[in-house]
Structures are given as structure tokens and as C-alpha cells.
Image (tube, rainbow, N blue to C red; front, top):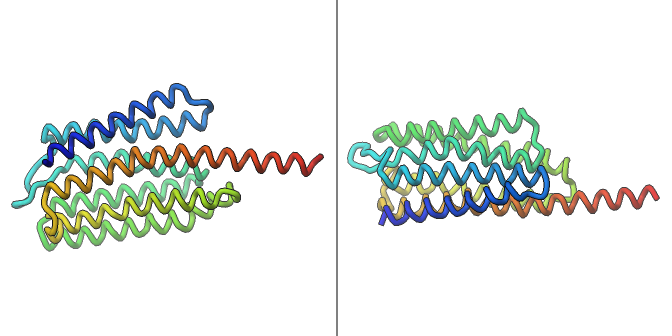
Amino acid sequence: MTQVWLWLGCISMTVGSIFFGFGADRAKGKSWQIVYCLNFFICAIAASLYLAMIFKQGFTYIGDRPAYLTRYLTWTFSTPLTLILLSYLGRTSIVIAASMIGADVYMIVTGFVATISSKPISNVWYIVSCGAYAGLVYLLLKYYRQQAEQHYPRSKKTFKRLLTVHIAIWTAYPIVWILASTGFNVIGSVAESACYTILDVAAKVGFGFLALNSLQQLEQAEDVTQYQQERALT
């Protein structure tokens, strides 16, 4: 059953990358092309690495528990692109965008160390990784949202929805980690693969569609603002 979930992940990411790739080619403007391109690479990277997991490349045993180390390679390349996508939509400053990406990469690297470590050392690295994630969430909820709302004062609901969905999905990952064999071993390897696959598809393909919808709402809000400013001048 684990292979079934990996195939579902690979197919979903492939379909998503094809959709976003065609969208980038037919985009109606530069902003749309950028958002489509970022989503394309996010899904294409994930599709390739899911294929690698299907072939058991990056698969190993840590002690007596199975582990797909390829997942961490996927997240190392794809999650910074997701944060770049968010930063582009919110017109985030370079300093905050770089800080978020730095916290993200540090979180993934320490999560990887936690996965390859034996217990109880793995638990220590898990806490360190969660600390990095807490820092990322802080940056998103304070500085990212603050800057986004300054640039788009009429679109607070749009960014609230983006952040709520983004944080909800990403928060589920460490929960799966601690419930799987890497943590308390409450769920089996099949359930672990199912959870990670569902989360990956939601975080990449699903969030990609949400980003496109958000861009549309941002452009509509800007049009309304421009119209009101023009009326005020006449």
C-alpha cells in the first residue's frame, strides 16, 4: 500500500506541474506567469522525487524503522519556493523573505538529523526543528502579514486565508513525524506515507490553486482602489 500512495503522489504532482506549466505559457500577464512558474517547479520537483521514492532511491532503515530520506530532499527544494511564492504575493521585503527561507531550511535540516538519529537524541533534534518552525510561523504572522497588509490594505482577508491554510498544512507535518515510527510509533508506515502524500499534494498542488485565486483577488482589489482614486480626482 505504501507504493500505491507514492504513485498517487507522483501522479498528482505530475498533473499539477503540467497544469501550471501550460498556465505559465498562456499567462495573461507577468504576475500570473511568475506565480504559474513557481507552482510548476514546486510540483515538478515533488513529482521527480516521488518517482525516486517509488524506485526506493533514498530508502533506508534507521535502526529497525524504514525511512524515505528523499522526502527531505524534496522539502529542501520545494518549501523555499513556496515561501518565495508567498513573498511575491505579499511583496515581502528581501530581509523578511530571506529570514523565512533560512528558518525553513534550518527546520528541514534539523528534521533530517532527527530522522537519522537514534532515540533519545532524535527527540532533541525534533524539538530544535520545531523551534525553527515556531520562528518561521512568528515571521509569517507578524512581519509577513504586516507588510502584506500595508501593500494591500483591502485584501486582509485574502492574506488571512493564505496564512491560515499554509500554517495549518505545514503544522500537520511535525504531528505526523511524532506519531510515526520516527516518534511515538502510533501509526504504521502505510499510514505515514498516506499522511505525507496527502499533505504534500495539499501543500503543493492545492496551495498552488489557492495562490492563483489569491492573485486574482489581489488584482481585483487593486482595480477597485485605482478606480476609487480616479473618481476622487475627477
